[in-house]
Length: 401
Image (cartoon, rainbow, N blue to C red; front, side, top):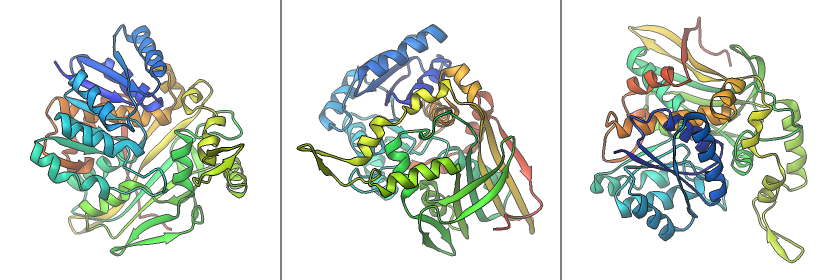
């Protein structure tokens, strides 16, 4: 019997358990836990209606180490899939070490009181997981996740040396709201408003947030403006592939989104510094999250497609080579299958795939690993089999910017 415990009942958690329920030969027993057990119960009902599969539910505050340990002791899973907030990564990793359980997540740790995310905090757990004979797999979402595996695949089969890497994330969907975020608003806005960083010639370069804009014609989506950002997979990819001379991450935003974001910044609503209101201390960004549309509800109205992939330039057999590897995901198709929009789908499916490969022992190891350190072949195969097919296209040259 393969028991898996999923912590986090947002859009990504919902997609992951729906997809797990479709593979009962791998996931024989699924438990979904969250701070709000009502969210888990709602997802469990949806899974049973769609697939006649039963999943267990539990309540846990993943900010509380002892409570998390008690849940792991009760469920006794082979693997914990952390789809909660990135603030909780270290607590859940600690619980896994205490109980002796393998670990997987989709986003790296960041502290609540500082808009800063980096892998070094989790990499410090490597020796402890190694000594315990446990595997901790970091970043099994789409970006990070699939984009890391695309890079590893390209290195294995297409390049003797990778010189430049550009990760392009386009959400061409329209949800009909004047302003909404496609995943947790608090995490999303912290990420977007942080300074843009990219890797070039052995060091990090930094620019003001949203200051570098380029236009790109995305397959099946069309031309969109995309902006240079910092994203966590850059840190791990240049660490594990130090040959890369330049690595950048780009994300598309519409003019309406950016206008609303600018106003919210100007009036202080994106701040994470506590303020006093009516005798209570509140954090403006957390209040903003409470009044914005719930990302989990956007699937009902969202139409259009996402296009996420890598443009990689380098050398093969002494000759220059340029490759574009990408996936197209349709919002309406994702909602029809699992009741979620494509942004949640593109993260939840890879979380399921990484979990399946660990449970099937196709991916093994003792310590803390990023996903690009694993064999890309079975992951790439499962993407094609589970709703995220990928496309390879040779380009005439590298990006012109």
